[in-house]
Length: 523
Image (cartoon, rainbow, N blue to C red; front, side, top):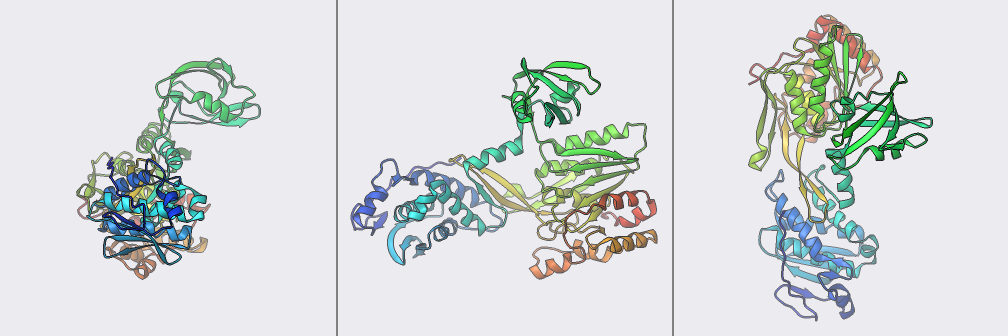
């Protein structure tokens, strides 16, 4: 993390020095700069400068399109007007940043160089002066001002880069990383607290806890007549610590164990069977999603009951960790390309390849998608479709085909920066285009029945639309994107999608017709 401290020349009269010129009334100058330690009337400009310096220096070599420190600074300062229309920040002579209050010059500061530090310091001084001059700024407080500056800055870069202030970043980290516990989720069942789900491979699962078991006591304290949130809090604690607990099994017997808490990523894999078809709903891609999908498939294939089909339900899946989506695709594919990424930073230009593990080889696969399927979920769907391993069914997906990197900031917040584009194995960009289904269900039941009838005769109605989609290459105009996506509009999930998927799996000839030929050279 980059942290740079500057020595500044403060002008305490209406005169010019090498660093700044102050044209505020004397009382306002005192309010703005009379506080020690960089405080300006309650505004800590040193703290803002440290955060902006780290962020700008992090962004300069990594944004998808080249930007300058001056551009980033002025984009951010344009947010002052959204807080108070009387405020405006302008750049004069390439390095003179000025604050206007009701159209009149109130403060200016000089910034120079291409690094983030001088421009971040200038932005902080302008923000401090605006804070002193504007009741609206003071009303929302410094943390909100910081977020506005970042929101405006990042809005000029792309739709997905974002800043999370400290209190939001903590919750977001918990969702990504998980919490220390035993791997069970609970629900209220009358006066008792019962187990709803158990994460595969967690301490709870290894101890034999299963859904439906009722928690009796935790660390010597009864769990009866408590709400599920309080019992959950009793089970969770610091990583590596022990929790003693007892539970009533579904058959009425009692069990107990001492378990060691571990970091539990959020569960994202929810399997079930429907006859000889395995349905796996994947709600996101956490650190263990690929491991859990692979375990479900391997365990199911060991069952005496034959498996003829696998349905991966990615509807509403907004994405998550790219590497786990790639690893999930890798598990089902022969040797070849899974996905490519490209950006300005050298480390973003990568090709991920599958290792040829191919679990469930020969088992028919359908991937369900909708307008809410995005990012890492689109990577998985695109890889399985492009490589001819699965039939994608549903509607056009969201079209978020970029990768983000995270920068922890000095204030405890986090910067999520888009730094590379994602290309499917056939080379088409996921961004804006999304994945085009082989069977489109967003056009209604009549269209679905027509497509199934065509498949029974060996013809894929969506073939021309899919080939046009897969032949597209960036850059694409908005009109081109709309035209390519038009044959299968993005939509919410349909209740009958699962039924249609099972119908396709049960018809081998129709399934074969729905698969486009795999890439000629997947390596």
